[in-house]
Image (cartoon, rainbow, N blue to C red; front, side, top):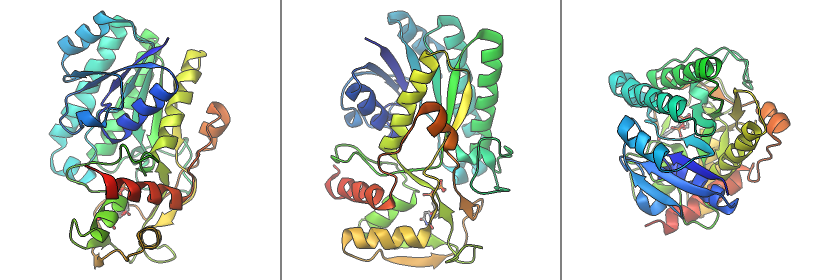
Amino acid sequence: MKHLLVIGGCGYIGSHMVKCLLNAGYEVTVLDDLSAGHADALLGGELIVGDFGDRAVLDKAFAARRFDGVLHFASLIQVGESVADPARYYASNVAKSLTLLSAMKDHKPGPLIFSSSAAIYGEPIRSPIDEAHPRQPINPYGQTKHIVEAMLADFDRAYGLRSVSLRYFNAAGADPEARIGERHDPETHLIPLALQAILGRRAALKVFGRDYDTPDGTCIRDYIHVDDLADAHLLALDYLWRGGATTAFNLGNGEGFSVQQVLDVASATAGKAVPYVDAPRRPGDPARLVADAARAKSVLGWRPRYADLDSIIRHAWQWETRRP
Ligand code: UDP
């Protein structure tokens, strides 16, 4: 039976990945320092509590058993914080990832799946965005993902370490059975903030800008269900196990929804209007980010199961109403 190492497996996307791997019959070991993740988000597998930037922790994990692949989800993710404190972002997202890649070079577990981001594209010059779009990140968070992708290309050329980078657009939704879901602290993402505002758990949602060049003036994003993201990772592993070359794929639904459309669907789902106030633009927010994910579909055979915004928000709502 194949055994995967999931770094950051106690986080939002990582925990849904662990569920997906267990459902597919794989054995799973998670390495997570619990700085942002939650041990009770694991639906199975073995947990090593430790820092993936600590070479001794990695050496011990890789020496203990042979892994057939590594999935790397551990990352700082706040764009604004990355602008205010880039040192922390480069140390965590880049330097620690370099330690991981160096350990993989020496121990030679299976291939790597890396959590990248649409943030590597920067301000879009065309929409939808395909993988050949210029990569000019406009904040340190996006830079860190861009740099790790560059390291991965070099590590393949020099050491034969093969990898797939998956460039996520807006991950959203939750386990349809509401066992796990989004639990960021602080939460900065639109859908959980809107739903928590409905539940009275936080103040009115701030709509960051109504003066964008979009039909209703609010920003447009491509929301993708977290379980559909996880499925794509499984297919990317299969691709690498079949001998596929190092590459990157966009993951999105190819359809954009505005902030106002999200609020409308959230209100309809909850049966209660999202309390909101209009606020200035948030720095660094492009007007429109929509994926062209045709390559993931044609090369990996990926087919999203929950491509509609209603399902994504319904699952997020079920999670918000039942979460611990
Ligand atoms: N957004 C908003 N109010 C909030 C949080 C987000 O209006 O409190 C908007 C944000 O400007 C962006 C969209 O919602 O246009 C999605 O933002 P999110 O932070 O969820 O994801 P991002 O696109 O930044 O990765």
